[in-house]
Structure formats: structure tokens, C-alpha cells
View 1 (tube, rainbow, N blue to C red):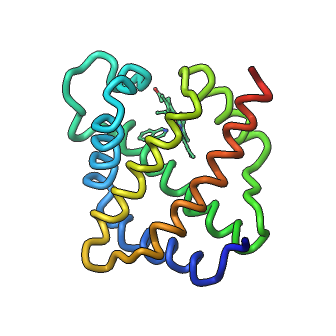
View 2: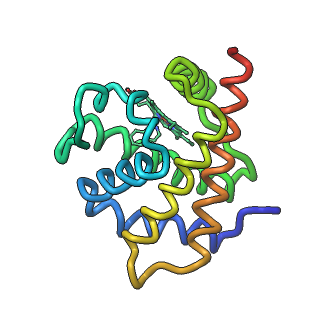
View 3: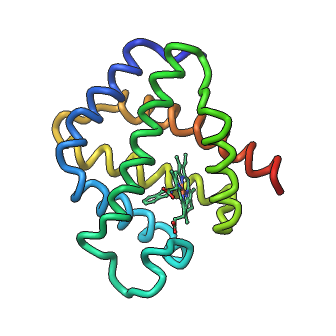
Length: 154
Ligand code: HEM
Ligand code: ISQ
């Protein structure tokens, strides 16, 4: 238990590196999601009518960055407060968006896998095992909060 200072720093530091390469990062993240779960494609409005993942789609980029930023924020809160406190309005909104898009629990593992692999690839030689643990834990807490809201709404 407890999210250490070191874990928080590890997430923050890796994001500092990653954020300088948003276009590539978001594309890679998305490509990995669809590699692991090809059927997820049709859930995303910006992919529904195309066969290729758009290389330079502002909506895709903005979405992907949000997921990373929220996970990063989750790490900070886990350390500072011991829990993830996403604003209740944001959480409700996220719950209903995902519920409405047909997202189910196993999908969260897919996105997690893709996120961790994106971090690993983006960091290259700077990557270490601790980053996996820290990002994974931060993501899990956030995912649990969203899943709980989804359940409360369904
Ligand atoms: C939409 C974050 C997990 C699929 C969104 C949006 C955010 C977000 C912020 C709304 C973007 C916007 O409208 O501005 C997250 C976070 C997750 C998570 C933080 C986990 C901790 C998942 C999972 C799936 C998924 C597991 C399933 C593969 C979608 C879809 C949309 C969406 C289909 C709607 C995209 C569209 O506009 O067509 N997500 N998400 N998300 N998310 Fe997630
Ligand atoms: C929305 N939810 C989860 C993961 C995503 C990845 C890329 C773009 C949007 C996303």
C-alpha cells in the first residue's frame, strides 16, 4: 500500500519526457490499443469511417493526451492524498461517456497494456521497471473510479 514519493516522481518524470512527442505518442498508444483489440475501433467516433488510423487527427491526439494526463494526475493524487479524487462531475461524465460507448471491464486491461507499452517505448533507455509499476498502479486507481461510476449509472 501507499504510493511513494519515488513512484510519483517516476510518473511525473516520464511524462515530462513523453509530452515533447505528443503526435507520435498518441498515435502509438492508439495503434497498440487496436493491435490488442481490433474490435475497439468502431467505438471511437474519429475512426469509425476509416480503415487507417489517421496520422494527424487533432481529436485523436487530444483524447490520447487526456488519458495520459489523467493517469499522471492520478499518480500525484495517490501520493498526496492516498486516493484518486477526480472531480465528481468529471467522473460522472467519464462514466457516462464510456458506458454509452459500450466500454466493458476487460477493455480497461487493453488500454492499460497499451499505455504501459507506450510509456516503455517512449522512454527507451530511460525506461525502468519501476515506471511500469507506478503508471500501472496510477492507471488502476483511475480505472476503478471510472468503472464504479459506470456501474452506478447502469
Ligand atoms: C472517451 C479517458 C478508458 C474508450 C474518453 C474521454 C476521456 C477518456 C477523457 C473523453 C474525451 C472527450 O470527449 O474529450 C479515459 C481514461 C480511461 C479510459 C482516463 C482509463 C483510466 C477507456 C477504455 C476504453 C475507452 C478502457 C475502451 C477501449 C473510449 C471511447 C471514448 C472515450 C470509445 C469516446 C471517444 C469518441 O469521442 O468517440 N476516454 N478512457 N476508454 N473512451 Fe476512454
Ligand atoms: C479514450 N479513452 C481511452 C483511451 C483512448 C486512447 C486514445 C484516444 C482516446 C481514448
